[in-house]
Image (cartoon, rainbow, N blue to C red; front, side, top):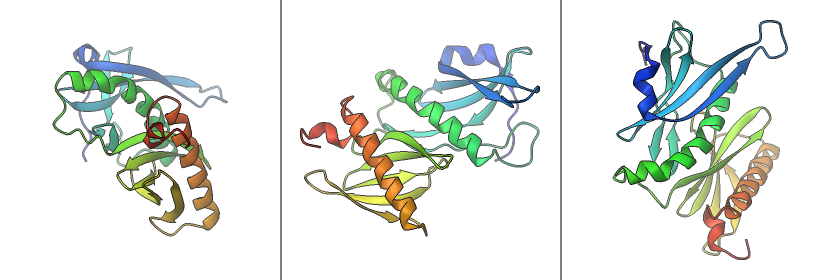
Length: 206
């Protein structure tokens, strides 16, 4: 996707629902900080990089949200750049955006954004392993683990009594990684159940 021209921060503020800071070069003299902003306008979500000094914002991603499923981050070309953001940076942005999205969704649905709702599919949470952030998705008959780009990494069956099966790779992956992905998914499901979310909220024994 081609780079997009910046917009005035003031034009985004009425649609903003979250803001956070990105710190870079933290261990060097070139340490800096960049503000990020999340918006929702008529059901379309955006993530923006702000430059407060000039009052402008550049789009970073147009996340595809269906119900509580973060289906695709849809990162775009960085301002003035020809390549994409690094995998680590994309993982970081996804991890910072998703919990803020969860807080926002009830209000988003209240504004009538229900036509794309998929209550049987949702992103339950995220976990970190090996410097990467993975998302755990709840589908009708399985649990999926996805990477920072929303691509499937592993599948696990979800039985009728809500037991999670062994991890099966979506693409070639060592068994040690699959075991850790399953462990991370189980930890996310257990944590979510404590907050009345995810499939295990339906089970008193999970």
